[in-house]
Length: 400
Image (cartoon, rainbow, N blue to C red):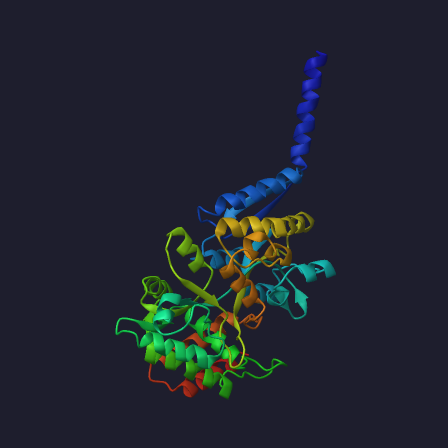
């Protein structure tokens, strides 16, 4: 009887312990077979270290994930923790869906990207992984064009000259991979030149839209000249296909191109370098993935502990190794041998120090489409560059 009684007590105690567990939900976008097991492994390790917390993992897709998040928050059923793209944060913050994040001095120093999560002087998410673009070149084509093995264009003049020289090698060779009108892509190729020419989308006090400044027009004229004279025009995948086939001298791309070269075991003589500028290296585009906590979550303390665990330097290195990616937000992670031993990954680490992000604005998604349409009209339509940018400026001002 005593044995039966003891077993019954243990069962009751176990049930009480289980019922005392805090359950938090996490919605995230990493479903690729190469990285999903790492997400699950990190989640399981967190639960092991925190036996009083259970994590419910939900996968989202880029096709409809944002829509699902919008609906969930609007209906009051949003997750405790959610992965957000940097350009979504202001939109969800202004609608009161995100909890404010208190950044201590240590975290401020350790992580890059806080400014992209800051809206109206409050921080609403923690940087997880950042993203930027660099300039890739085909060294074999550059050698044929008369350049030595150490050449890398630093200025706009050097870059344009190299593009023209490669383009002149053959009718089947193009100097520059220029993006077709592909949504969410085209404007990210123009903005690095826009910023590198000294242009700004808004004035420093955020009152005026400066999209049609002389700097902006000069940048679009420069980009258009490359496009019209030396451009291989296709979507991003098509540009990269042609580049890896030896048909294009230069492309602007992300770290996924390094991953592709590695996965396909390509023997490619690759140059990776910073976006060129007027006298010195220029600016590139910066975005990122962030982890935010639902303002209405009843488990904010547990959610915060989970966010800090997932974004730890150790887990960022683990994730980047599995995903073959180059842009941790953690400075400690970026000093790992995985990054420091790879010249091309180092290009990305350096470019992040010379990168701008779009304005943190609830209407950025609308602004983005307006800018993209202006670039499209200038490259593929009948609009003069100045006219296209002026009309875009008026549309943006009407939304503010």
